Image (cartoon, rainbow, N blue to C red; front, side):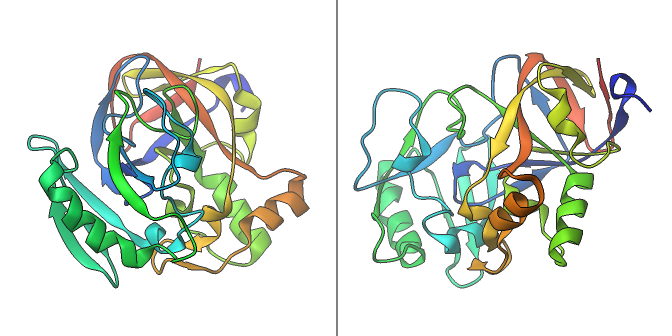
Length: 253
């Protein structure tokens, strides 16, 4: 199979309604041209040292797993109709609130602050940007390969969860690491077409077990030792709107 006719299946769709605070898997979703996966990183939790400008802001302004590993163990559920989010953590328990509702903010902050190390800037507010607050400065969808994950897991002698990488779309059917050869190419998934833009350079959040919130795998050193970089997955932009669902075929165009 040549790179031009690579094909496979979509095996996971995941969004993170509040950046760095939980993940939610979906059965299907409609992607819109020029936009992030709907409600992915729609909100973000700014900390007391944040220097926020209008619209999108860099990740350094927000509470996230790289600085507060316990946050990686949060799972989430979004009710789009009411903009209500439910978060669950193995030690903090569960909270349901509306991120846009100022009256709910104190209750959320009281719930999340025990998960933030005392040495780190503490969370103070929830913000939105009119687009997903992705780590990229453009509205992106993160595409990751199950074969690449399996290869890295084998090299480390440890099964790594997909949720360490906080991606949006997981695909199977391509050789490990082949996605790095697709920069500038288009990929059709279900009814949508995305353009592969760039590789994703990773941070220490990927070293955290998403079930426990504890650091237990040196993914960055493993990537550096094996490949001389710390990249995993690719960012893409949606260039043709369409609905995608688990099991959909994908192909390079």
